[in-house]
Image (cartoon, rainbow, N blue to C red; front, side, top):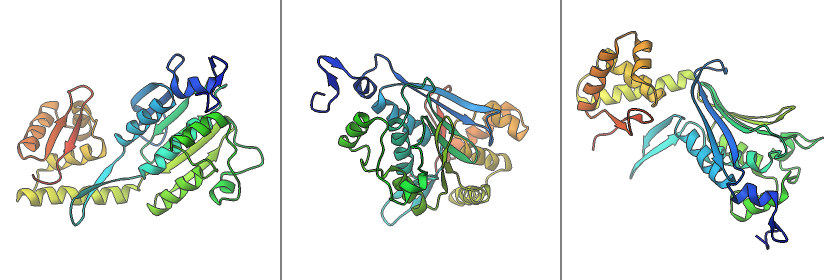
Length: 282
């Protein structure tokens, strides 16, 4: 820590505590919302820890709640996320690196039906726009240089202001729209999820392939349940029943049938676990 400039005599600087200590843990507020606004949430979580712990926890939270499609290459099956995970990780690193740690407001992750938002409190450099950094015209202006230097040495960050450009380039390569918004209270990175028409087509194709694998067409409610589980693997039996307007007993019977057909399995406990659609037979 001495070589990194994180000590003032025998005492840790604030940057060192933020990076490595849990004595005064940082917090990140994360939530999944049912629609395109914050009226109804499906899940809410608050994580605590140092920067490195929060980066891992935040990345895991997002990756477990976005949609993944399966494509089969020449040698093996590949799972492809709806938004590029490298860009998400970069946005998370950017958010903790440029956060204003004198502000009591916390970093936030908000997952909506149509987008994912990553927010950090703190002013954007005055006189500049995100495009200045995306185009590579400007150099990095870290709010927290010691934190930026340590993240750079840990290979979590590129020092010379390339973070926004890397996010933009990853999204462009994946054909995912991304926006950067400078707010009065902080900075926001917005990843837009695939349109409903695209998602619907992928889901319908998957349901059809599952039926072909069985050699029989799935029942109406079985197909609808599979569709719901692909969209939200954490959905409860009660919520499925409400969405399909059938009883919870009927939902349980259909789930049992899908498990018997080796199309579905439960991962983890009843509370806190999730469903996994089995897309290819063993």
